[in-house]
Length: 170
Figure 1 (cartoon, one colour):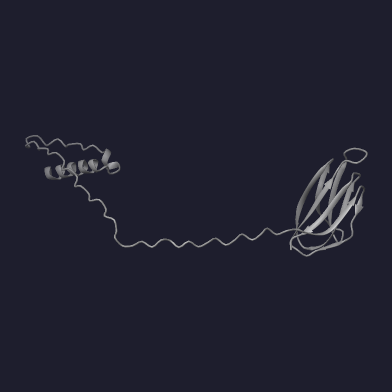
Figure 2 (cartoon, helix red, strand yellow; figure 1 turned 120 degrees about the vertical axis):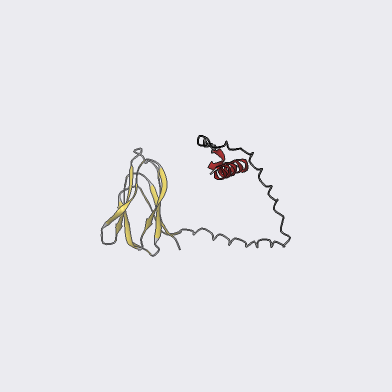
């Protein structure tokens, strides 16, 4: 029993010297020997054995091969397919969009009566409302992207001057 207790105490002490996790913070609690038993002698914990430093490998190390990154493709440019200018309510002719993405761009300024409403409604060729591209008051220059190929027409609701273009991605 004494040998086991001494061995446990020496092991915990050695772990503490080596800095091993939670065992390094544990404090051994010596057990009191039963009455009439000879007192146990304590020995200092054995010092930890020094560890050898790693030796560098003499095998040649191949340099990593550098693969050039592929060049970034130029961004897709927009191609204009229709343009309208005016200063009043108007429905456009039907136009065909073959690409999956297209955009409507507009530039509008207040007219002779001051800032007014400028709205662009998007309709499918059958007259179904597909969405609203613009709903602004006064000067505005912007664009919106629409998704879906098909036949469309636009309806402008305004009294101020405007230029509207429809563009597709090739």
